[in-house]
Amino acid sequence: MATSPETGVHFDPYAHEVHDDPYPYYAKMREQAPVYYNRKHGYWLLTKWDDCQAAFRDFRTFSSAAGPALEANQDVNAGYPMFINMDPPQHTRIRKLIQALMLPQRIAELEPYIREKAVSLLTPHLKSGRMDLTQDFAALLPMDVISTMIHVPVEDQNQVRQWADDLIFREDGQFGLNERNITAYLSMGSYFDKLATELSGKLAGDDDIFSAILQAEREGKLSHDDVIGFGILLAIAGNETTTKLIGNMCYRLWQHKDQRQLLIDDPQKIANGVEETLRFDGSTQMIGRQVMQDVEIRGNTIKAGERVGLCIISASRDEGRYENAESYDVTRGARDHMAFGSGVHSCVGSALARLEVRVCMEELLRLIPDYEIDEAGLERTHNPNVRGFTHVPVTFTPHS
Amino acid sequence: MTTITYIEHDGAEHVVDVEDDMNLMEGATLNLVPGVEGMCGGICSCATCHCYISEEWESRLPPISVGEESMLRTARHRRTASRLGCQITVTPELEGLRVDLPPEQGADDA
Image 1 (cartoon, rainbow over the protein chains, first blue to last red):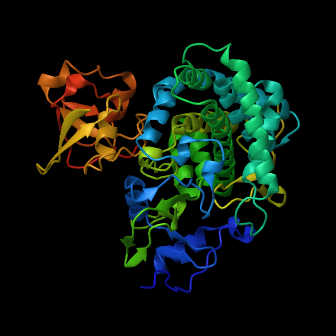
Image 2 (tube, chains in turn cyan, brown):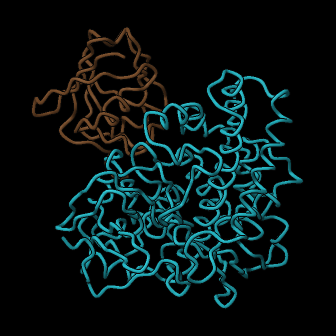
């Protein structure tokens, strides 16, 4: 039977023009083609909350073994092993090595450090009345914080960040990886190979992520390549999406000044504002899976071997799940969005991301409550998955 | 492997073998037991692996931590027997444990 219905809806997440505002496309898909098939590249998208949630839950049918990107035919096994590209129970055993370090109560110990760092990044700009909220602030803090857990020295942090940026950037219409992406990946591999070798004799115990994975290597639970894969994964995961979420929140609060005022007047609400930004404009758009057996969803048959994107940011705008789903309401506080995925592969760093974004926004709204974005200077990264700005130039009332 | 029985709110029982060092949430979700969601993947952040453990088993479980308590406070249908499955590691001492599940999972919105 036909598995690729013609729907009249066309959506190309690789086209740069889509990235400014993908939400009307998602709304159209939810309405006209909730299980969308892209004939050009041969992948499906699930756009409704219920369908995404069910697919995350059924990890046997919707496998991660070919990676979480949307593209088909990628050979993730040619690279360093990463637990994001594995299925349970192997995935679960490896995730467990660091999971206890990522619980909210454990992560909370970092709050004073994160706050101090946020203030130290903002303070030098207060007198000038202008800064770039991504380049001077949102891009620097997550790299600094994850570096305390993976031991990247200060002098290397900009380089590692640049590799992470290069790894994800897609040219307009680019499907699959190009040389810039691959070079960045290989550079990170060499870097973490060297770093892991240097640190393996120095770190003891399991008090931070890199110590815990080096300990696991000594115990024979991980190979050296596993350790390198961990380093690359954490350097990307600990950077890109948190940076972009801070930028997205700065932008949405500027766009919705009544909502910004609510948070300035009552900073206790900022945590809910972070949840709402995750739901309304999260920095992760979709997560790829490979279907392992034929599955029928809303009358469409997805065949074994086909690629499916779980479009979590469309799910977050699903009117069937959220009242006034298309409105940005910082008091909503819903935590059932899937901005961090859901289930066995749910983001292990979500508590850290929530803490970083909350503290950054608390300090930003305290020190620079009246920022105005220079819209002409906004620039985005381009990737079918990662959504957010690389430049957010702002002006504000100077003070000391 | 340790045998654990999960009992849905409507009484449906699911007997599964759980690998040691997995937790009660993973024991359910890796075996696709209905009624346990584990949305946050086990980092004590969503209260969707809420379950009830009877008094007779309580002494064999780790005590409720500060983080677990703060999530349980938000859980719908909380009772004195409430625990979060992701915070209970399965060991051979739990052989035969029966885990009751609430009518629905999740936290009330803030």
